[in-house]
Length: 314
Image (cartoon, rainbow, N blue to C red; front, side):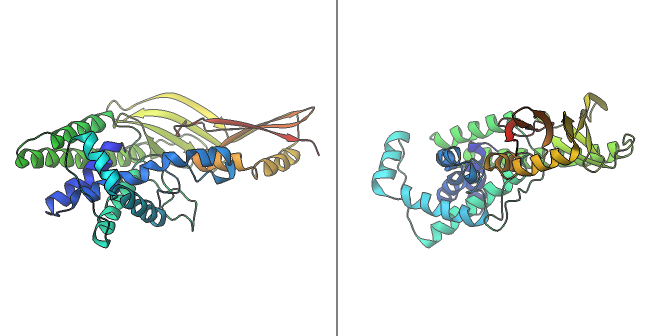
């Protein structure tokens, strides 16, 4: 979800429950997206690939740590004084246990919203690197624009009742969009399961920016995939292609597996596989060793969808 929505959702919920320090919850809602400052750590040390956007801070434990640190920083007089000067509003944030809990509430709403998006988040880190996702959203420009409009309304000097109306309309829209996407996802899975192609036994779906259009992946269990785009309103399929999980050129299967096993241990490969739902492999034997190319056939991640490594001959 976008930055504005992560601010508005906890603010709206706390407003409806008449919580006085609702702004603290909103700050907590955006706090863990400042993980962008950690990007340099993951860039300089590929083994620490968890230090990235929607990485370490997007977990239950480190979300609490991040929001607490963030709350402490913005509660310093010089910091909120600077914020007040920039936004031309009188905001004062206190650092206490009550506000720490409110900020963490904002984190929990953030984690829930990001759980709905493709790619997922490592909720249980450091106990597990597994990403959790409902795969309902990819990008949603309509929600982003609406969230920005509500934020502007909150900033303006308007009657509080109009601000509450704007918050209510936005929340109703957000819940409605989520409900439609959930229904569409289940309907696509059900309809396409009835027409599975030969040799394919499993089916999964991934969202696009259009809530009625989905990326469908049929699998035979791991050796190949059938990938296509399906529009549930028009009941039409397009961009259909079959992808092999592994292709080998100029080598034996046994030697290829040894090379892949070596490559899989490399930090940059581990990071690539962590960031992608599917990682197929093209392996080519050359005079200098094995050229192993990992790629995501679904293009389900916002970053690079291909990574090549050279495994030297032993």
